[in-house]
Length: 609
Image (cartoon, rainbow, N blue to C red; front, side, top):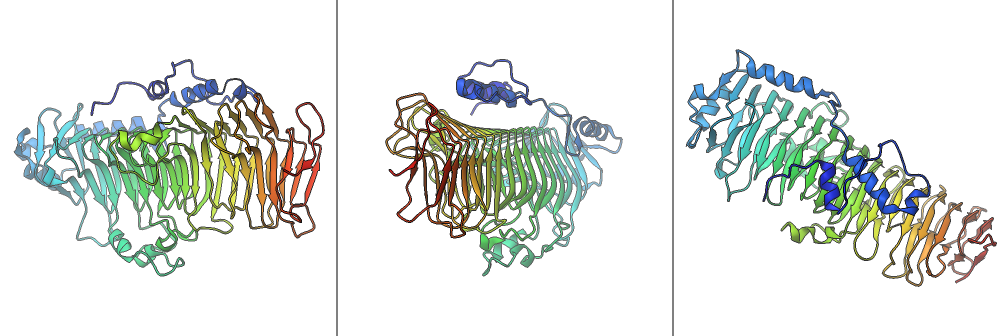
């Protein structure tokens, strides 16, 4: 595999789509209402250029990057710093420097300096049990673990209790690599740590930083529990209600991790909080977290404490990994301004997560989904993101010689997989101001629905992407102020936009959406579909369906049962649509319809198929 191309993120993404770079739009601007329909591909190009040209921030969360590296320079120049050569390191790449480096980190010196020239070969893992900074000179100190070493540095005090931590670690400007043809291991693995920094490092043919917890093995041995009401993390000894026993204050910034083959990890943090991952590049190496199992018998209940918290993932690039940015049982996770392409499974995924945001990201070509949630997912916001499936996602597994996850088809832009979690407050998701586009040579992309207690799609743009959220057990669903453009045909009769569901008495609505259809759709295709098999009201109001081709009339189609509460099942009002069809069985839905017109201003009433 070649080295990283020296291109900006914006250049990479525009080149990958065959788009010439232009002047990017200002991020705060949004296309006028009809501009998307006039030239959706230009809108897509502008949004990609806008997000892809975002500037590096001087401050990420609590971290001032200039101050961070000024501190590294002060430590490097400290009179208390020691040089690894003074402990016998030869640095010729042939002699074994393991003992010398171990003596240096055990010396009690606060800083161990590694020169940029020379190669430090390790035949075994270096163990760290106390605070120390291992800092390389500018250019990167070269560390070459033998395959047998597996892990270059292991940070762990095996004699400490499970609630005690090694504190004060820093690895900066180091160059880790396992020599070909070997692969594997990690640059640094840390168990029970606080205040760990991993910055400006280069890692090849192995993973970067892995952070775990001493109680983790007990947790895994106890799974699954006999009841969804039991938190296996508590059984393993974690606090039931306070995140005071987690790894803390992990920085992973400005690193480049290239596994050179599927699959590795740039950064993995289990059971941690206050984490920053910023401006890293990963190839076959993802950024992920694990705060426990997200399934119902593995601690995924929404009532349990999330044991990865306050995780900022900002400005990173990921290619070719199994998932780009994802994790289980997190809370207060922000994934912002990142770029992911050719991802095996799903690019950005919140599994069993609460109070999380994905904003301003770009995801291009995922085998399964560009964006997704799994299991219980409460108060999750996807905002101002772009997702593109070009058709290459269907072949990403073969192209990268990877193992398939699920059945990669490269068509889904967004997916929800709730896997048995249902009921109020279990799955609450909002998608706002995103652009989802399928640009493959045939067919349409899609949004894949699942159970949601509350689901809102508002102000999004969809290019050749269906958003049929009809799901039997869905709760309150809102589709509002979205724009849809279809300039290619469906493969069969389908609903382009839809909602549906069973429970409750809460209202759902499809309102103020615009659909423009420029292709001959398969017979039986409907523009807007709504189903209702339980109590509650569905409102379909002020939507417009424009047809610019000879497509058969694309109707609003509803199918339901009586409300049972003396109110209509559906209110269909003030829409501009060719026709409205009631598919309900005899004695079924009660419909209130008014103010509906066709494109010529003629009245449209509800009919049967």
